[in-house]
Image 1 (cartoon, protein in one colour):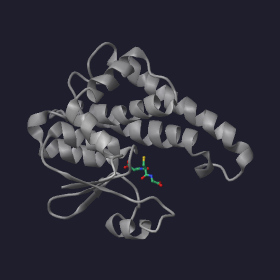
Image 2: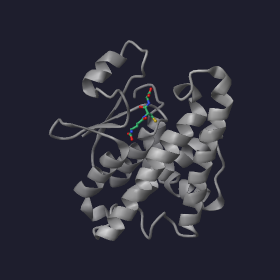
Image 3: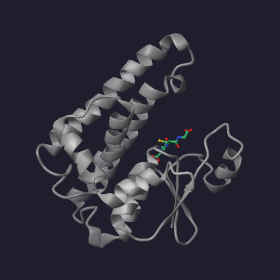
Image 4: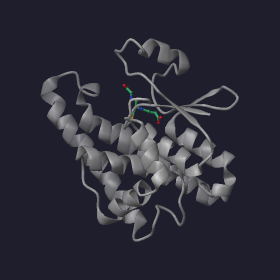
Length: 206
Ligand SMILES: N[C@@H](CCC(=O)N[C@@H](CS)C(=O)NCC(=O)O)C(=O)O
């Protein structure tokens, strides 16, 4: 199994999940658009995005929520996705919201307004709109944790989607974490396997 990542990108959520699961995996740095290497990365993942997972049978899997669900399903002993239908759909509902809305509609607007508006004069308004969506997501997660250790009764894949958003907030100073989210972030960040995995992304060998 091999994870394609970009340092510090949303792929850190899948990287952390793989580290938590603890089965052997490889990582390889993907390439950004506009670089010479991007064309060869697109031969691996035609979408040109991360995370991308090459499974043991050589097939490609993309899209954060789907990769996370796959990893949870092939490691059922870790209990990262509930086995009852109500539990499962609620975890998927949260994971989907965090990735599709809070990240893609919120954080991306706040960081990359040019993707949403052709005119520079609109960037400030787009950023503000993105920040509002991002912060609303963090606030929703804050209320849902409500003194628990995790978003749900036990650790699930949704916690790894929240983790990368919290990490972006901490590292890039975008939005602000309430006490529940800060503690949730630190609970995952304090796991040595997870911290090592994320830190390895910026080491020269990766
Ligand atoms: N829908 C995809 C989105 C992934 C995505 O947008 N990844 C970003 C990194 S956070 C990326 O690959 N950006 C590279 C680029 O667009 O240049 C998913 O859920 O995995």
